[in-house]
Amino acid sequence: MPEGEKTLYLTFDDGPNPEVTPLVLAMLEKYGAKATFFCVGDNVRKHPDTYRQLLEAGHLAGNHSFNHLNGWKTAHSKYYENVLEAGKLIDSEWFRPPYGRITPTQIQSLKKEFRIVMWTILSYDFDHETSVEQCTRNVLDNLCDGAIIVFHDSKKAQKNMLPSLEATLQEGMKNGFAFERLDSR
Image (cartoon, rainbow, N blue to C red; front, side, top):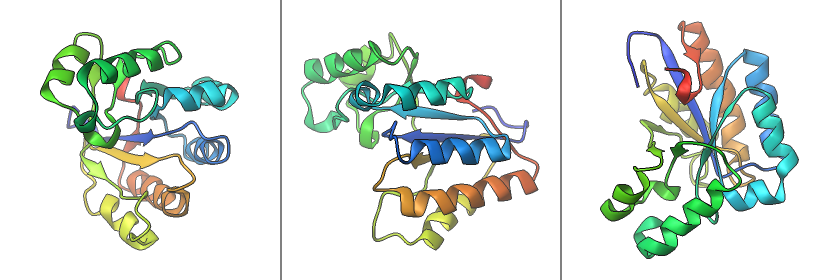
């Protein structure tokens, strides 16, 4: 992402989750931050109200496939169709491959229809062996202008994600950063 504008890009994978996503939305609102949510199509299908809530709050939605498939372990045609299936529920040009795993063939097909986005900072909020403190350090020690930070709005990540997210928002704002959607530039 562009540098020189003191901007950070918070992203959240795997939601929407009716228990966790509203907590994230409330925290983002508290700090006046915007974010991008890479949603799993099946979760959008199961939790349309939560999905609508994140859109109405002014955040950007991105496609994270319909069933959170690992591109390295999934045949190209099945993977491609799964992403398109999610696209029926998630109107977005943005795509992030689950696990960050995608083959060159999958990239070639998907880049015709999507902007494929990875990240520059992985919080490891989903890893139960990672403490809240380490999750927070994973983010704060790597903050830099234009960074794309990935958290997860899931039950599995909630314990680490929420305190790390708040610390990230506080530290970023203290240092003059704005938190924007990926499509803001």
